[in-house]
Image (cartoon, rainbow, N blue to C red; front, side, top):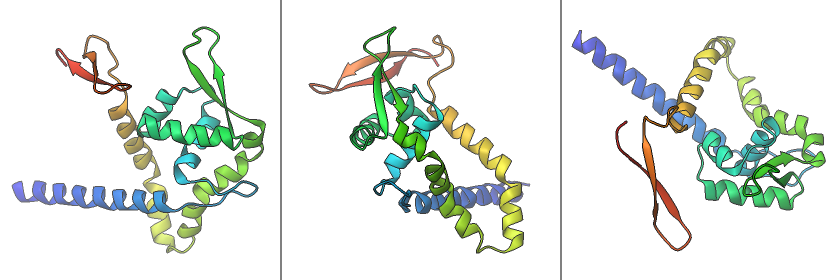
Length: 182
């Protein structure tokens, strides 16, 4: 029984490695969107998320994408410069800036969606029918894995689960750390 458990764990590690390698391969591909200058993968991910969730903040965007806030801010600045994202102050709290797609990005939405998945879809056309069926049948499980990964990045559901404190780590930077019980 210990051997079967060990083999199952090895299979899961191998699957995790395959999925990570696949994610890295996909991430490195920089597809072009018709009608737009080439978008780096980070900017493509950001614009895709802004199109899906208008009104999102940079902090929320970074958390949802699992990226550093500084990298998301850089991508947002570039997208604002390209006329694809607009920043708007929240009327309820002027300290909060919300992001929304512009007319230009809304007009390019279908192209963005096609490019986002088109490279993978094209690669799938070169697979055997058996492999395509296996991937299709794994779709629900892969979505569940994606949700599990996102939930790891989300803040605690209840404030009493974990207390935090901000620690200044430089002249302009603070870092939040957990204190108390979990």
